[in-house]
Image 1 (tube, rainbow, N blue to C red):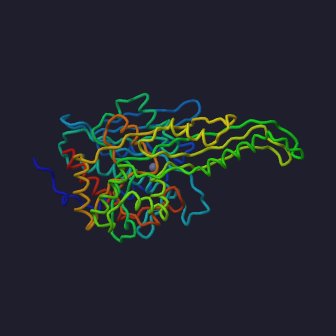
Image 2: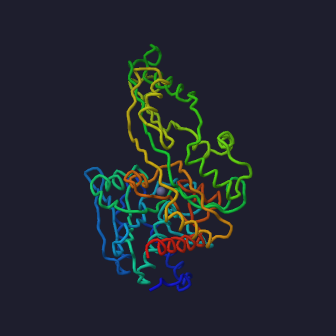
Image 3: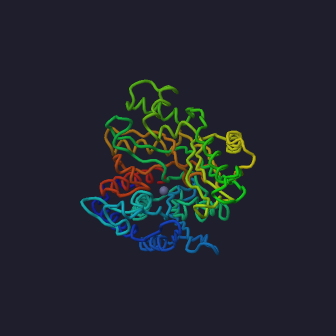
Length: 443
Ligand SMILES: [Zn+2]
């Protein structure tokens, strides 16, 4: 039996269904912290069951400190001749600053062809596309050679301790797969000043190295400085960190991105290490992708205007290039700070190998994109942020970050910012591309 043709699907009806689902999904506030993802998972469960998908397992990561941290795995079984295809999505979202928004962030508003709200892209929108693609395969009764797994995880926006990391620790069998699609890359309407669509498919990502600097000193009266202030010590350390000139380099994964961007006609001149590094001077993302970055994100010290504090601490959000040894980086940092009285605590350190480019899945993604979006190419990219793909990549599973939508620069910056939104056209495109990728790789 040959698989049904894509033309058999009523895409107007599917788009309407997807829009309604996403609108309702956004209304379930899963701001993390605290997350409380259980109601979102129950919402997804109901839709799966309504469509006859009952092979569903829950993994509750809740503990004394945090409740409602539910993860869910739903399976559409194949005949087992190939390993599963995992549609990975997280159900939590980052907080909003309501005053900066033009529309209510948790109302699920649909207006002028656009779905508004926190999570519209990151990543409830992608979750809905994954869900719809799976439902379509189910409705069409397409025989599968591998399981299609819909994996909805908690806590991605806070380090995944109650989500993907919990599953990797306690239920590693849930990570058994050949392929994973997740967030991490998406399409843009323009690429490096070239007014032509391109789809980033993230094959690699920088690793988080979150550190806390701590100092202690002698408390005292603000009127009598004594040279042993914890805060002064911390500020001297931070100053040295800020002055630290770290080398810029182009990792092989980024070189490949630029080589393919050149081959695809997005940049005219043959890219060199020098020209790529130069691009970073006017593009903060490429700047971040050519070095290990450090952002000082919080400082805590002091109780009163006229009291010299006895303790001080600062958090550093360091992001390391693929292939960087975090311990070596910390040793270098220690040398830069050059003060044995400054403590360096490790808060979160994670790294991941890159996924290969020459896979059957990548070939299908490129074909399907070419068929759906005229003139667009797929570029294997490096993500400046980290995603749950790391737990899969660390187990040797191919995981790509690929949200198949085409966003304008103003839509892209709304992710984690104000006015996050997704056009209905993009939702439709995403459902179509994901469905077609699944059909070709799993049927
Ligand atoms: Zn996300």
